[in-house]
Image 1 (cartoon, rainbow, N blue to C red):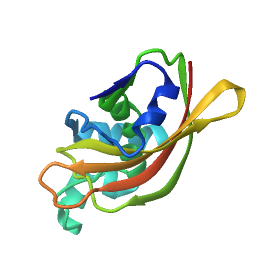
Image 2 (cartoon, rainbow, N blue to C red):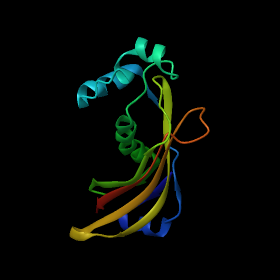
Image 3 (cartoon, rainbow, N blue to C red):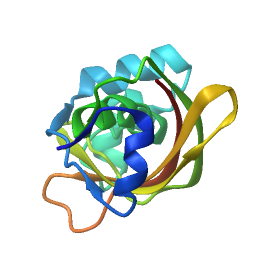
Image 4 (cartoon, rainbow, N blue to C red):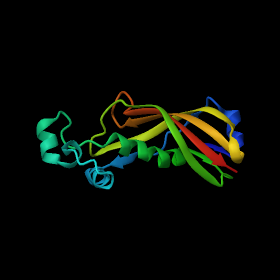
Length: 152
């Protein structure tokens, strides 16, 4: 695990791999609860019998945005900045959902520290190229560049 004292210290590690995070289960209950929370009630996420019958996935699949939302906590498990007082998600660039996450899959995050630079208000802008993989798959299920602001 990449560990540094301050956000500014990350600048010396641009190009360094981050992670992988521990595996995390994406069960059917989580997918259905996320559907209720965000209002995405499409049957491919909420109706296990229909999804098994009418798709090649064998059941419900996770919303891409559920997988994306999990990247925040998985990043926290993949690297550590001891003296960061707060973090803000600033944005996502080049986001692609490149494969399905089936209910019951386990996912984890890998990343590469892409850029670190000073930002307004005493923040450090951190860019990380993310890749989320589902266990047993050959290619990632999500790729993106995450932009974070960290404060000392």
